[in-house]
Image: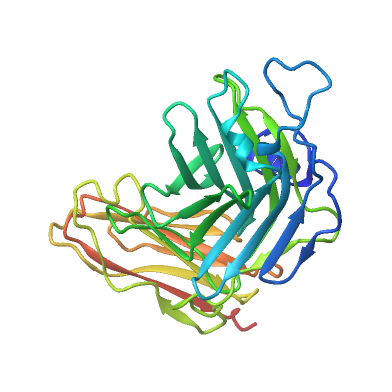
Length: 341
């Protein structure tokens, strides 16, 4: 079992398939770009109606994968090159489609991008997913500004994830990248859907010291890491403008980076304006320091957690609101030094 799969098993309680195959050579990486080679001719997963020895499937035989932070576009680009993408049009009888998964980790959470090609209705789409605990789609190319491309001539699949992923119909931001974020724990899998089963055909991952991570460059409007004495208001007044908004899914999801490794991190609900007098707004904090919930009634929520040595990193604040139509509020983040002894 590969390093990435082992990590997923430990962190998420999932067993997600076979181990990685030997790489064709040492992986090369820079801080904003990473290349992961894989041996050609080893796409030999389960194939219907073929007896041993099983041949390699060119359309699913991973050859070279890449991750790159594109500064001009402010995109995180994932690329998957296979042996022969033309062969995708000549699948074994009885198959329903193909999946290409590019898994990675950020802020201690497991994510992935995926390209799906259906043989049932000729649909194809590019997805951003989170392992929570199984594959959960955050956004896709049909519903958001996540984009992708298939280049049959170059045998290349491309998936672009913007620094801020926004749903097309509501304008809601559902995912964000920030300056200096580390993206790592890469693993790539090609799979073929066999009605009830979707077995792995080829798997690739970095080996040794190569291609350990990619660093997100400068994101416009991205704040510097917070240190002692720093305080930020995450956004101008949030407004709850629909009955169900905020009640089931968070209507606020903001990320920030903390540079201090001592003292206290404080998240405060402030400047609440509640026309009905009935609203109940709860804050949630997840990130390097674990998960925390503030459920104090009366909209006087404050979350305070100690910042421990070695836990410098990223956090995300989200909010749920009940009976809060027309209510507005702010969220203020501050970092406080240790109390004087």
